[in-house]
Amino acid sequence: MRGFTLIRTARICRKKAWSHVLCAGVLIFTLSVFTFNTPFLSQAGKTASKYSEELLYSKFPDFRHHNRNLRNILPNDNAQFHRLKHIQRTGKSLNKAHRLAANWNITLTSELSQAEVPKESEEESSVEGESLKKRRLPHAIIIGVKKGGTRALLEFLRVHPDVKATGPEPHFFDKHYQKGLDWYRNLMPETLPHQLTIEKTPSYFITKEVPARICRMSNSTKLVLVVRDPVTRAISDYTQILSKHGKSKSFQSSAFIRNDTTKINTSWIVIRIGLYVKHLENWLSVFPMKQIHFVHGENLVTNPGEEMRKVQTFLGLRTFITEDNFILNKTRGFPCIKKTMSSKRGHCLDESKGRKHPILPESVIAALRRFYRPFNAKFYRLTNINFHWT
Image (tube, rainbow, N blue to C red; front, side):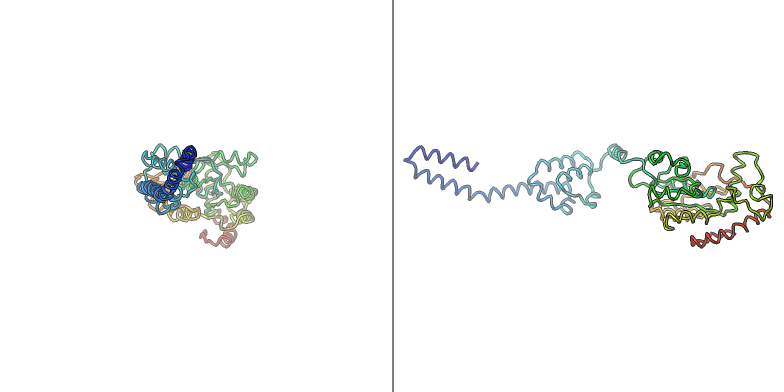
């Protein structure tokens, strides 16, 4: 504008020689006016920009403290300012403000994220949450042992809002490994980024190839092992076999060679599972001890709150499940878990849990205890935990 005015004045002066003196005076006057007014024009622009900035701060107070670089941006971009103002006026989510700020190369701090601003509608929040859900490989696996209390542990963990678990046992690392990780991932539940995915397959613990396979998937996978007195575990396992297959050979005929209580049949899977230390040594050849958490199976029944606190700590979860979540089923002697504190009734495991065991002769029980005793002692030393199995 200034240049256009000067050129126009010069042309007029060139056409009328008699007014050279007058033209010179006009040119000098014009230059002096623009020179003199420049500070005032600049100040006016700053005042307008400051007004826009203060209006923004009145709508979003925390911007003043956490995003001072806005002072250098807003004066040159009133259109962007009005977009942000529109977001506030229409009640859009703060996430949109984050995206807008990203276009300005601004970082909104975590404190600003927690500021009191209009919240998005439940519908918007739900849609946005759904978009973050996806199937993830497990962060933790309950690897065993069978009839140790793995189902109870998994059902208790399901109550935690930050945990999602599979339904049926996947048996990926022992039976379906050839199907690949994509097949395995598709068995996992959909989770949000902050939620922990977990599965359980008790046969993993006794399968030699499983530790290395899990490590290849992720060497940071957390492993949970529920252990129980190997004698009562073996009897419980046998009880389940009877319930599934009806008539079966007697416990003694399977557990002992030629029914001789001094010769234990370690080839029988029911007996072999209880050799915890042998299986654990296989896992420790791949994973460090700090990545394995041992759950006391008996204590999970008698004092579930205590065991669940330990499990939640190991998994890096906030303590959500406590003693107050449990109700004892007096008929079966097994704890049921309340999904909410206001619940009057608890969720109990199905009737297959807590079955009555067959009564075995004392000589059989004594023989089993003698057999397992040295293996238990070594297991205590290796884990540095005394489970007090007699």
